[in-house]
Image (cartoon, rainbow, N blue to C red):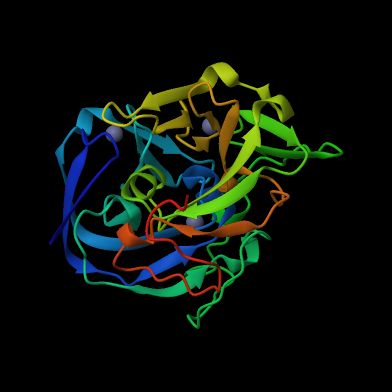
Amino acid sequence: MANGSCLCGKVTFKIGGDMDDMSHCHCSMCRKIHGSLFATYFNVSEFEFTAGSELVQSYVSAEGFNRAFCQDCGSVLPASNDGGEHHSVPAGLLDDDPGVRPASHIFTESKSDAYSIHDDLPQHTHYGDGDASRVVSTPEPVLSEGQVTGGCQCGDVAFEYSGAPKFMMNCHCTRCRKVKGAAHATNAFVSTDNFRWTKGEADVANYDLPEAERFGHAFCKNCGSSMPRESAGSGILNVPVGSLNSEPGVEAKGHIFIGSKAPWFEPTDDLPQWDEMPS
Ligand SMILES: [Zn+2]
Ligand SMILES: [Zn+2]
Ligand SMILES: [Zn+2]
């Protein structure tokens, strides 16, 4: 048995019964929806929302695969598929250690060029019995010259930026893990002068975490994908690298807030690590 919750805390759930090993999913859908470079999921046989089920918004992709997110804060939530037999749980939402650990990488065929796998886990180009459908469901991105383009999974929202981002960081803080529903966030920081929305800016919801000085989350109102967000008046946008259609144009500097990382995830690359935010 383990508990989980979204960033705003209004949606809570508990899981139990049989739990699959976790897998790191590199499919383009997961990257867009979570805004992270990969998602980490496992399946459970028992699942129940314990609060906030009225805030759970579902998004069904073209192939009929269910996804869900919190209408209030945009955290990716567990969703049920196969007639309610399988409950897919994004591990980043967990408040407790479920005991299971990642056992494989799946959909590596669709892995981001910005991410390199450094561990020894088995890698699968797809998942299950030829179910390749989830790889190809992202709308064909429009690439414009000299621009890095990005957008949400459903295609309602799109953006672009020019030039190299100021820097890029992997963040393991609890807030980032919850809101992305992932092992960690990977964010590129882009000057507002170099950035523009090319489609659907009005379809982006903004959530400000009340107890935080400036932590929040922007997401597509239709599909729940993480979207770029300006940090209050700073002139800098925090761009979730998973939402990009190509490489971000900068290398990650390292891992921050390692002190609050998930118990089920160990970074295995050789990037520097900081317990909190380096000065
Ligand atoms: Zn929420
Ligand atoms: Zn996936
Ligand atoms: Zn969308």
